[in-house]
Image 1 (cartoon, rainbow, N blue to C red):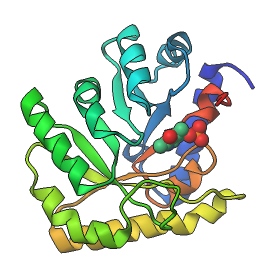
Image 2 (image 1 turned 30 degrees about the horizontal axis):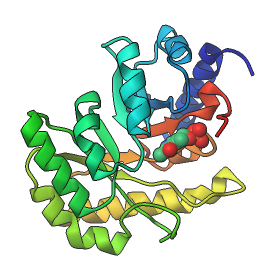
Image 3 (image 1 turned 90 degrees about the vertical axis):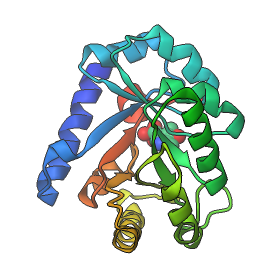
Image 4 (image 1 turned 90 degrees about the horizontal axis):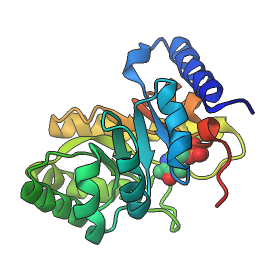
Length: 228
Ligand SMILES: *Cc1c(COP(=O)(O)O)cnc(C)c1O
């Protein structure tokens, strides 16, 4: 399996190769190293290898781990965020990837105002309408987007999605295309660029980059299989 540094290097090379295939500038794709369930010392190996951007998906774990690591790191919260955890998580991270309702967005905006913060948010889309997944269905997003964009304090960076589980990375391609098309439609309609596309995980990040991802969330390919 190699060291964290070696795996990180390999993921970076694969992102760069996918950019080259798609004719994209590699500076347009950020690698978010998903460190959920990974001990702070192991996250430190990725830091030593030059990684600065990390993602956590559980509030309690983020609160415990982030203070153990250097203050110069950047953190994103990628999981489903319960309203009652917003106040604890917001001061620790620069972006939230799992904002999946107008109600949650409104709550984040209120707490951000109280704390004096301007968080970046990605609106999570449930592309396939899976009952097991969080996220706004495309029609719900169309309906509430204007209200979300009118909220103070939030910088709506773009859209995020986790496509249905697939046997082959190529099976995720239509979903990534659909997220991008939805973004293009909404950007044209609102005049807000929504330029961020948070899509692609260990199994399919290269396809996501080919389809326009601006940030890929990669965990197990860097840190090894999680014991969950
Ligand atoms: C765990 C997780 C990831 C990373 O998954 P891997 O398959 O380990 O790369 C990405 N995004 C979200 C929202 C996650 O919860």
